[in-house]
Length: 417
Image (cartoon, rainbow, N blue to C red; front, side):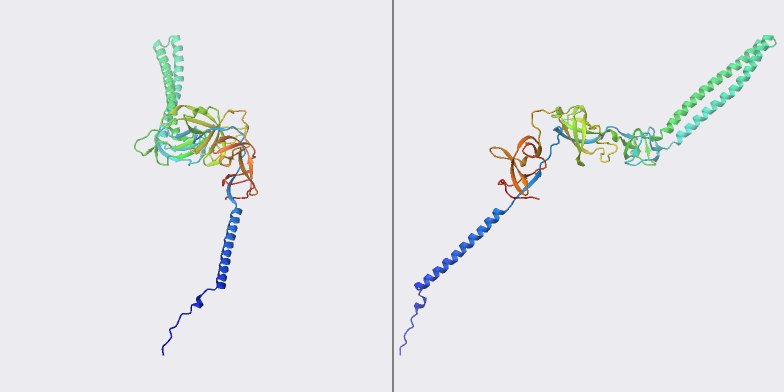
């Protein structure tokens, strides 16, 4: 019996109209959910972006100094007008040193001593010569008194005719000879006293004293070393004992470019600031402008002295331990008179970067409780990176110095630390 071939049943794969409608509806719901999800994420992101606070940098408006303005800046060093290397007047060996670096010494104070044994031997010899001459004078004076008695006796005998004239002449010669010897001995005493003073000076030269009051900044010799007022050339002989500085004579020395020296004049007020103490402003004035230029550096040397203000000495270089010779210092030469008396006085000083402008005016953003407030200002003169504000802003006001260009009035901000 023949078998009948199987036929595939394709009816089970046929999509009916009802199934087609159901699948289409499910896809629409899926795409709608995805669209809603995307819109929600975008809304959240937009809300977070809009609520984000802009970061800004702020500064505080400074109060003007009220004094004259600076016309020129320069830098230099503290230099004492009285600075000396103390040396011996003679060549000798050091036997004592009585100071250290940083020791304050008074005028005439003993700094060091040299070996004075040879000078003292010479002094003792001169004193012996003087004493010998004085003893000879005493002997001659005794002989002279006896000779005068003999002369008087010879004169009386000659008058009476008992003694010849020759005996009188001999007695007179003996008295005159003794007087001459006494005069010679007296001159020998004077010469001996001169030699004593010379030898005493040699002894005193072995004592090195401070010529003025000050502070020793270097100790150049030790006990046992040889010192000499001139260089020995061999390198084993010192030429100095100490370097002494008079702190009362401290002043400032600066080099000013010859292109700007016309802005400097004697007695011109100056503000000085030490590099080591940038917050300490020391009042000073120009003492002198050295009348010569350095052709190598094209500069002119200016010396500046410290001053007193309002009869109160603000700086005593001898007592203030912060000031040391050769310290670096920056100075500002101040104007002696206002170049424009009609120019309004500034009320505050701020950085130029804080000032913004539009087509109508200049303004700044003031920060109050982390909220911006737009404030119109009137701008005056500029000084380097700063600018004078002559209206619209008071000192100690917090303002934005750096931030996005999109800042607006009333915006909340975050201050950058």
